[in-house]
Length: 64
Ligand SMILES: [Cu+2]
Image (tube, rainbow, N blue to C red):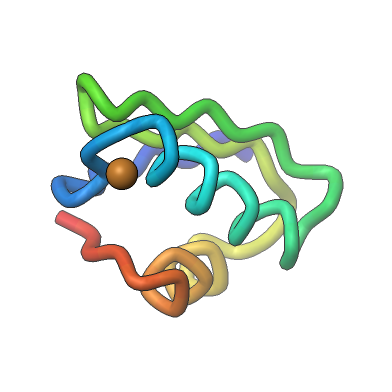
């Protein structure tokens, strides 16, 4: 399933990397596209959206 999330405090490519890592930690098969310019993260994953959201929050980011 494809999930698209907005993360307003993803400010740079380091944030994008941190977020991508947080997601692949809970789902190593996930495909993540994080763009600090648009603040959008596109995730192709079988993990539930709730779990993906918690992983991002646990990494220190805020979801819109
Ligand atoms: Cu950053």
